Length: 295
Length: 216
Image (cartoon, rainbow over all chains, first blue to last red):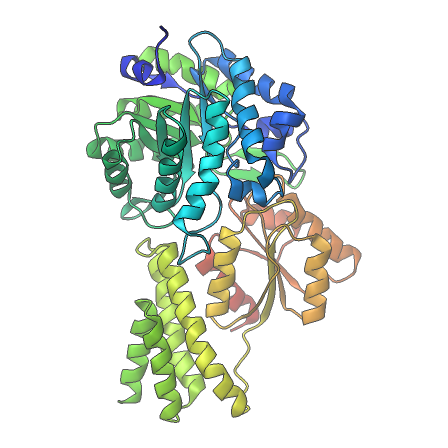
């Protein structure tokens, strides 16, 4: 019987993958299109990216389904294909999964708001997420990662929905801004509040991703570690993106500066690390060395 | 109630996001036959400005911002018909056409900028998300706007901001509208490079910049 992802997290530090969107674009993915459609239309491209991350040292890769909730897909007119695109996302990632590797079903935010700020009710969000989770589970994702959440209420909707349709572990990462008083989501949920609620719900691994660079992420991990004993996930951006007028994208931190803070992220208590926007297999290859060294 | 006391209560109602009170106080001001432009300038506007400051400091977050902007809207719905009736021209601070550029469906930041500009007395025409670049220009011409505001969250769609400015140049409309850009990957350097008239990092700075550019 092979190890589950939770058993692996208990045993040693776990490495996730890095950015996905830029990898797709480099392979000809057109501006403004719906990334999830490539799980069906160009699966060989999606598989190649996953394969590269596994080869770089990722223990687990996240599926190409970040925008795969019914609500998010609807903004591309793809809502009817929610189940199919998510199932394909997990299926194709599994096809390139090496022995001992894992496939995490990525579940990003809807991009909309619950009432009173927005138009949606909690049951509507739950329904939109349940369909996605069902697809990912049927595609045999080993775990689900509800990520980049800016509203704790929405994250809890996604969590309830996922649990209704699957028994695989469901992890949650929120995205925080740094303000003078500490780390808060867009909606004003503090890191402490999020951890407390998610722990109460029995989420087996929690954390943060996106928005922050690796230096700020190291500070956030310290704050989170003081609040919870749960396994912590941390996936930082490589700083802020900028675009030259010629169309070249670069991230403010760059590879070397990004890597400098990874030991601190680990030392401050992250059990699961990975990259986010601006990172690529090169980052993961170098992070794999650090993760091994730091133990 | 003294005028100053009313202004202070209005400001507080906006800061604390109490909609029915913001409306009631507007009705009270109408009933007391106060100078409504003064009520707006000395009660409501300082309130929403304070909300913006609290947000910039990290004390307020998106829900508070939206709630206070809604209060402003509700109060203005009470005051505007009275101003119209009395044929009082409120000083229009300027008109903006705003939207997220084509290929980009992200609209959280754009909506926030739009509602803060509108709460601060600007005339805002919101075109939504994934807006064709031609549409920005058409609408700006049609509504005689002062500004075209282009939002983009992605480094790929951000190029739309550049293309929009090129399109304006082609049509010889460059001086006619001021072009403002925003969105997570945008910055001042980018704005300078593509020849935009302004960039703001967040909704409050956008309000301040537009005021500055309008000479208000």
